[in-house]
Image 1 (spheres, rainbow, N blue to C red):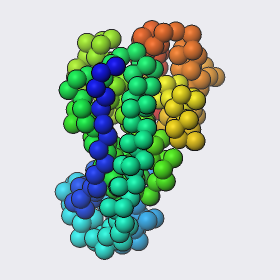
Image 2: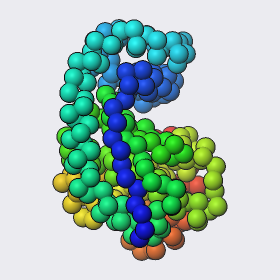
Image 3: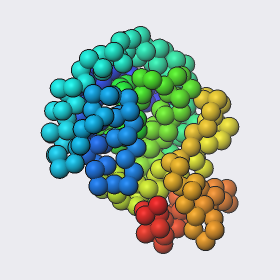
Length: 256
């Protein structure tokens, strides 16, 4: 299959970690889902009583950097050892995972995708950047959870190469929230990865976001619908049919 991408694990800097947390808190200010904000306020008592409303992202980042340096240092005490453990463990399965993803999506890795960076930090959700080929993992995860997060995130990089092939769509904005294409890319993770081909690496499930299991359209959950589509069609047709389904039900999908 040619040269396969390698994952390089690196520790996030304090500043990057705080900016990432600030981004999530800022994005959640007017959202019903404030999972990151709640999580970090519970973990970091230094910010538990702070009202972040009416603050921009720079102000939030400044507050976090001012108040959380000591707590972050404590959380990241053994970061070098953890990063090395993640790297050594991942190296043992890297090529197998890359080949399995290539087979699952019926597309080869592009020649210019030689390295994907995995940034290790103290986080709740794990953002990724398709263009920059970067994703994040949590320093608090054990090996199985690290592998599950990594496989989930790596899948996105190859999935969007498949997307470009099928739809000739190179608009990076479509690959991120709030575009419906982003919603599909997250929901389709379950039928793509939650099977023996990939869970043999993790010993745990590799699920989609919970909302896709709970949201029902015509008395059928989104995940159940996607599983049926994937089972009955080639990967190419499955993605196309799933996209049509998401477009037809965009309002229900986004509002749950």
